[in-house]
Structures are given as structure tokens and as C-alpha cells.
Image (tube, rainbow, N blue to C red; front, side, top):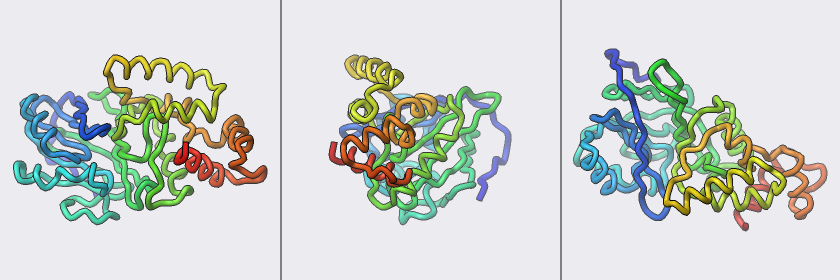
Length: 273
């Protein structure tokens, strides 16, 4: 399915982080007038942000069904009659534009096209959205929901280790300068685990120092980039010899284990870290 533009528009788009709950980020993609919201778990903080920045909501984009990503949708729809884009393979009643891999969601008011990637693992039908590079935009954008985090990945609530490993592989194949807008501020916790798994990773050590300082200053560590994730995120690096060695030293992996078994062992280690 392709939701195609009816006319050619030209806007400079920005992404605004709207903090919610203890550690969620809800994302407003906007041009200074209109805005699309990604994963609005809380309607009130979005309504407040729209008012503060004098924006009109024009679309809702959902990555998966969990309440901290969808809970604000009914109330937002009471204020704005807008399309709701979301995963075709999840039961979210508010969705008006069901999407799966290969579809392109088009938000007319923003002249925004987002390519959809199926990324099951955290949930069975989880999707991610990618804004490709074009002549009016800077780096590509990835809205990864709870699949790829800064320094980590989501828990496997519904999918399998193989599904999550494949999903992360799709995201790792995006251009290195793709900005990663994930849904939670879990970065320092993720990096503590990454440091235990791969203590000799110099790029990781540098990232820990930089992101620790950001949090001490009250700043977000998100977005990161695909290049940074590939250099420091153990769930994109689970085939690296140093990580495999750590898993074996900890007694969490057999000598003849497959890559998927290594990924599963790594995710289980993180669950109990």
C-alpha cells in the first residue's frame, strides 16, 4: 500500500521530543505549523506540546500495540480528526491506515513519506518508520519504537530471538548516518550492560563518557545513529568474537552455539543483569 501525495509541497521538517511517563519519548515531526506524532502514549503531554509550539496535529503514527505507545490515541482523536497509521498485523482498533513492510505512509500536510519495515520481536507485528534522505532533508530518520534502543534492544515479549536478530539486522543495514529516534531513555542502563559484555570496546567507553555527561546535564541521549549503534550496541554486535567470548566465560553459551543462540543468550543475560 502506498499513500501517495496529491500535490508537491516543500517544508523543512524537525523532530521534537516530548517526554512522558518515567522514561518514554513521544516524537512530534513538524514543520512549524503541522505535526505528526509517533507513539502517543499520553495525550495530555502531546496536547500541551502542540499548544506550546502552536502546532496542529495532522497524523498519528504507531509502531506497536503497547499502552505506553497507544494510550493517548482516543483522546487525541477527540480533538483532531486525523489518520492513524500503524501495524497491519496488530490489533489496534484506532488504526485507519494499516501498514506492513514495503508500504509508504504519506502525511500530506508535511509532505512526509515514511517507509515501513517489519521488525517483529518485541511484539509480533511491530513496525518501524524510516524517512529516507532527499534533497530537502538532512540525515535519514528511523523511528524504531521498542525494537532498537540506544545501546540496546527491546525485550522479547511476543517474538523469538531469531525474529529480533533479523529485525535488528534490517535496521543495521540502514545508512550509517541515519538518526535513531527510539522510544525510551534507557541508554545508560543499556551501556552498563554493554560494558560488561564488551569491556575492551574503546568506542563504547567513549560513548559511556559522552552519554553520562549528557544525562548529568539533563539532556537526552537520543537520537543516536546507526553507525554509533553498530560500533557500541551489543545486540548489533552479537557475532563479535569478544562478545561471544564473554558469553562463554560467563557460562551462558556452548562452544558450538549458533549465532541465534548467541543472540538469545545475550538477551537473557540482559534480562537478568
